[in-house]
Length: 377
Image 1 (tube, rainbow, N blue to C red):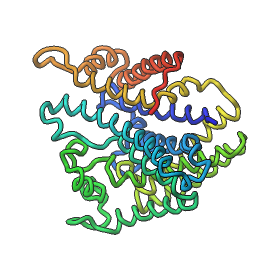
Image 2 (cartoon, rainbow, N blue to C red):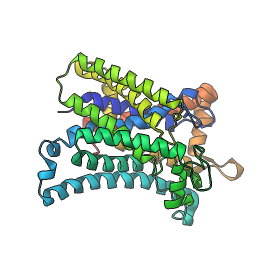
Image 3 (cartoon, rainbow, N blue to C red):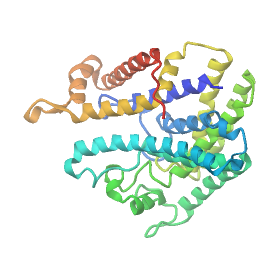
Image 4 (tube, helix red, strand yellow):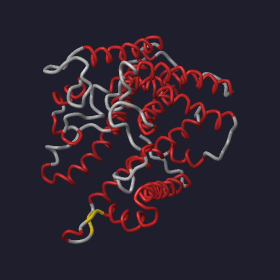
């Protein structure tokens, strides 16, 4: 069984991510397309948790051959093969993300790229959350998974707000003073964090609550997998989503919503919005069988290819220079200033640049779709 609504949802997430990550100029962006400066949650801050939610929601289907029987009763050889597939997928995702960082480091640091190579990133966090989540799902009962999810969120809240980082005070949620930053500086070391530290928004500690986002998706996918397609499911998803939004917002009053820290309130709050978005996709695609969303489905079917490909192209346009002397600029800057800014002005031109980039990638993915070329990890 495959839910096309999940492909559409994935398409929404990846299309929005490509749009947000590729403005003509970072100085001219509409507020709705920006992340919150620190505390808070904008529509753009929903994109990454949506990805993790979708990964989790797909796992009841991808892991169904192993979940259908008692995993604990399998032979050690069979279990090792299952774990091998999980580790292989996680490793490929991690290396793809690391490869994007490596390209940036070589282009900017030259011979010193290894000394300043950022270790973590979006794909790296997805890889680690998938690895942790898959192992937990195969070895824990559903009740234990619920309990584990709750304990992670509560323990993370208590650690971040009530236990002081060495040399700091309890409740310090600043970039440099929080536990996530401290652990990353201790283990990864500061030169290997985003922009040389002192904090990496896709760091190690925050991957644990991020895994709970994946679990919320898993619980949702598992529930839908065992139910006939019906509009009542959409209503239940909406009700559950609204409850999580209210709970997450309320928790956020004492433990702020924060994407870089991936706070527990942020997990619950964004999980609620993911449920609402999936409810809309499910109702339109599965229940009403609307086909006008097929352009998003095409993007969702090759999301990893689009993420990596668009990331490489963006870096290529940024690091490739044209012109001479003081007139040297990147290809991206030249295109924006000489074409898109001329057409729409600073802010609209920046948005048009992003939309044209997204349109070109859609045409590439449509070509791949017609030939049934799907990049799977």
